[in-house]
Image 1 (spheres, helix red, strand yellow):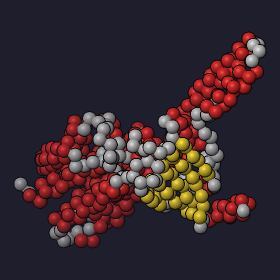
Image 2: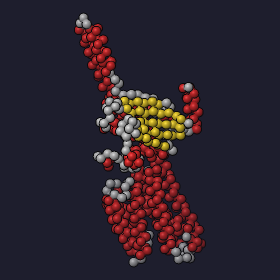
Image 3: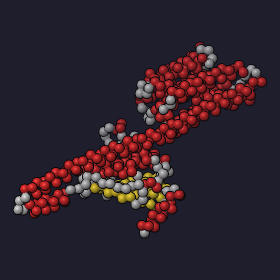
Image 4: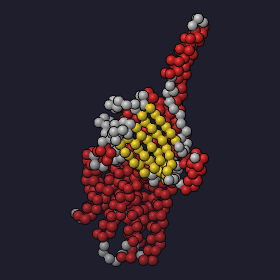
Length: 446
């Protein structure tokens, strides 16, 4: 038994399953995921090592990939077989592509016996793939990229994998003929560039589809908010109709004191009638609808909901969906803190305001709810952290998403909390071409 070869098989199997888990899951240290990783590594490494020597060269790669796909699908039933197939095949294709690059790189040293060094270089290059996936998983949305690969893309990827295997097989024979080495290396380089172009093309397509999907989601949410507003208006219409019917009845009865009774009734309902929602002009129609619904929620829980927008939000170059995610998550947290806390004896207040200072756009969301504890302040933006004792599996991502989105647009977020007020202050730099617009607006106000 070749111990070094088996060691390479173990490391390769471990990296395959780790890359797979990294793409589809957030927590790699969960006991169940660790157990699946251990089982896959142990079983797959033995099979890969066995087929390497027992199956003809070249064909063993097809056997190894097929077995790995089947084993991953058996261990992980949360994803469809097609998703498992596409990601596992993409991992193997990337690995083989790196191996081809390594083959090209060591051609000048073909007379030197460096098999072990070559194996270590390949392992290191595969480890770089793992680091790349780990670092850019969220930014590139690799899970969505894999799931959105079309059948045509999958077919092209499969053909590319087959071509790579064929070129590696040919490598064993063509290295005997120096006259064909240059042509062979050109073919290998072309193959690699083709692989990169396919990935880039599909990535651009996925990004474009993702933007379309974001707009669709925002519009769906806006429609939902408008439906909520219509429902609120209908309720108010019903209440006003009841009042009008009462006044009409008094007029029909035409009793001697009818006028005085109408005046008394109107004075009473005039002091009690309050609008269930507030409308604002933030410069973003989708956010206006969202805040109207949130103001109705605040009204139902007797929370004063103040909004003041000094500058329109359209000064910021931020996607509508991202802007709504940022504001709604912070507002939801603030409203929840006010609603669930019964120890506040003063009037509950939430305030949303925007202003510009030194060409920096500020978004302030504050409430007079309970003070945030120091431990929570330090960890509130960590993924999965939640102070709620219930439904923890579904919580802990709101503020993490907020922080991630703000950083995506080069913004900053500062949180202050004391016994009187908790404030989330977001800052974005205004683009140079819009600075003049801001200054002219300020001059008009002055």
